[in-house]
Image 1 (cartoon, rainbow, N blue to C red):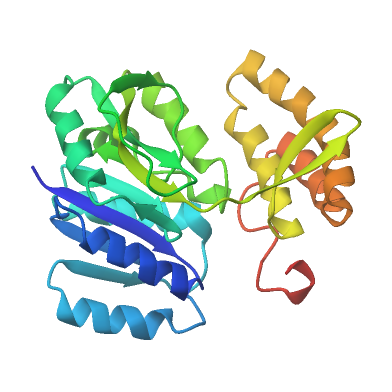
Image 2 (image 1 turned 180 degrees about the horizontal axis):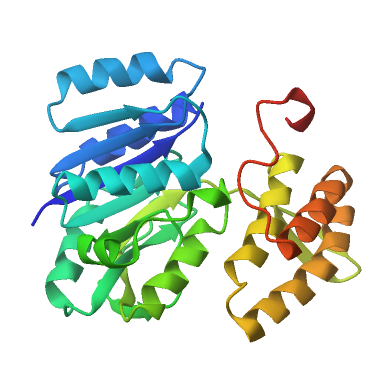
Length: 284
């Protein structure tokens, strides 16, 4: 069984170095390691050039432009399956898998049936969590520790690159299950993912929101609405939630409110692609 690790990176060289070190230190080594560089402008390209020249199983795909996590995972997953991967272990560049994370994924694959198309690692925010070996059913996964079967990719295709960032994993999870594949989570495959949450309180109620640049809020709104477009009840609930959430964002981070409003509007109109470009200084 060939398991390929897939990482998408963009201008986060220090996180990428930690991520690469964690993957190369796995007790069960990936048979191939594909890194998609979304046209980084820092020292990422130089680092990856040296890395690929010293590790035969590392494949670097440098893109000509930043097409977002969605485009990066779409490109990388297609490449991995074309190169013969049976399963692809996907994650962002700021993910730090525990040493036995991939070994536990492989164990889970050996225990489940052919109807399972995705095995999810467990995300933790604190180091030194003691893993528990347990397999449970899952409905939605994030592209951090998302291990997908080549059979799934051959049947349903790759993630929708039109999302740019956010909600691509949600839409892909829905597509996986809609096409008859099960998703499971293995509790003993742990990945430390950096804490990106900040909190404020409105009266007695805590509202947690990501500490991200305001322009990224646009994609959270737009893409989640787009991802649920084909599900009438869920789509209606999502629209209702985000209608209210615009005002929550206005409290937590006032500078993000215009992006929330525009993202909500564009989601209703089915807009896709890189509408808000992070290279533009006004959106940083």
